[in-house]
Image 1 (cartoon, rainbow, N blue to C red):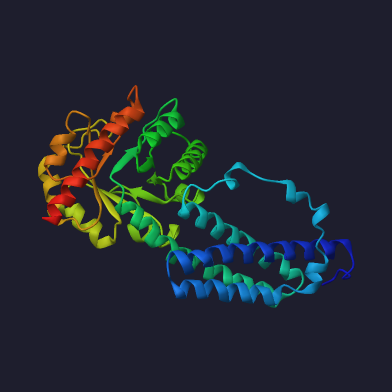
Image 2 (image 1 turned 90 degrees about the vertical axis):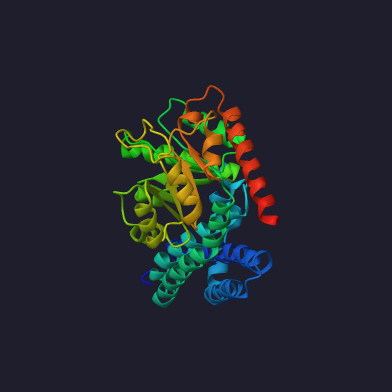
Length: 355
């Protein structure tokens, strides 16, 4: 390093390295404990422990000696998002992000001190990306399996208010869909909705825009027939994220399954203004999906409080709705109605399965 070891600049760099070594090790320990006691996964726990020990070897006494906690302006800084965690996925994801950010800082600043340490932190960051995929793939997919009411948003002057009302009513998945906003508005809305869904423990997906989904760390993306291939979206978002696909007939369903869709939309069951010019797939396609679709699927297309019983009767166990909630005068009550009907269907399915 060009700077003398006792210079103010060197001391500042050492404080940065010290703080981020602590941050990365603490985050790894939090994740390790869940891998050990929550997942009973010795391999993942061992991976976290090995990285912690490697970082400990780099945590030299000269870094610790530069520490100046009483005069650290960052100790008083906080953010409301750090004060609570909605569920275990939210907790783990926050700490994975913390580790990745700390490793990136270590990689850059250690270039001024020790290039071997910089390269080591770079490789470790890639390890954490792999750990993230292994950690969240089963968590998110399990949450998807347990979800049966899916809200697709439409433009609304009180978008956040309506979505929060639906979340209060028990909606399990929210997809942000808006074809008209500019990218900055879409990003802002998507980020606010993601934070809202995190608070209520609901999955949050972005329609079409893989880039926005990646930018806000959404739980996944929903793709139409003319959007990116599923494999490309998964490469961008990571193996642990959810990728769904719209389908309107058995051929499209078969293709989506072969491409590895985590779930599919089945419809439109009835003609809908959100898909102008698209003929209704009808109940026959719903019945086909019931028999042949092995992944979670959601009937969609003008499903409302009047016709949901017909859709459930045709074989649906999960539904996606738009206007029935987004345009409802009482979105919480509308959501609760759908949840009640779907819960009843789930109960009947379990009873039939037990007999």
